[in-house]
Length: 314
Ligand SMILES: Cc1cc2nc3c(=O)[nH]c(=O)nc-3n(C[C@H](O)[C@H](O)[C@H](O)COP(=O)(O)O)c2cc1C
Image (cartoon, rainbow, N blue to C red; front, side, top):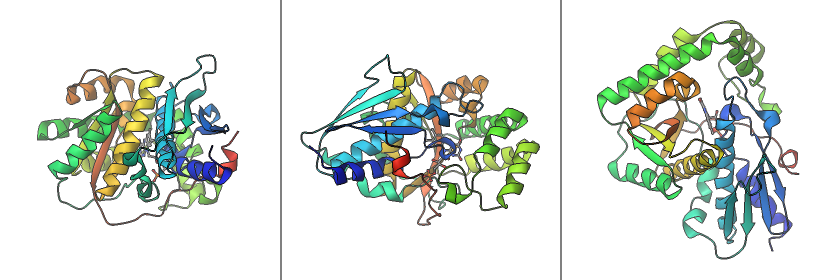
């Protein structure tokens, strides 16, 4: 049975997971030798994510960190997804015990080092061997991962990102929601912006459609990304989103070990009419969930803030 410091250690890994707009939409319910993962839907983004798809993917990322943290403490973990359909917010049950998974334990040091890297990468392409390792990480978790190699597919993806940006920025509810999640660092969640003082940035985002300029910038980023890839799943419900989250976090952690960081170009997934077009580019059955740009970097950004563990524990 894990003692309290061990439990705290495992949970401290979980809260470093990425989440859309850094909402950290999860709660943890530790038992004697288990941890339940619950969705905290008070942290949902109804304009950006009306079905809680990204919220559930974010929780899937936290679940992967729980598994890695458990393995790092030399313990095994057995996951049951959606264990009780009467408790809709209960997303997963992690039963702790048995032998540790050495592959997962090896990913633990990457948890602190992973960060969403929105700056430029080194210009060199991602090697075939490293792409194969990312693919292996995603498929181990039951997701698919498709690098967009050819120029036509990359250009189409860039077009979809620009179109998505334009659509999102035109939507005043979406802009208001984004502004609400622009927070000072001390608050422990949300997006912190270095480029404007915060009240001014909030006002700008809430009031003005910046779609044109953002779209051009993001299209440029898309085309200039050393690796552009779609992560997807066979189905498109809560179970698939939890699979996508675990696969995403696993491949991000594997990537960190190879010198890679990532950021997101999810705009075509956040605008319903564009999603089938991205699906077409991936050539896979099922649903695209995340569009990632990845590349090598030695640079470190200031880590994004997190809430206190005690505020996430039931
Ligand atoms: C499901 C999901 C969707 C995300 N979508 C975006 C996005 O569209 N654009 C973006 O810049 N970052 C996106 N992010 C990254 C988050 O903003 C980031 O994880 C959060 O701010 C915490 O920062 P960190 O990843 O550096 O720890 C997404 C993350 C997740 C898990």
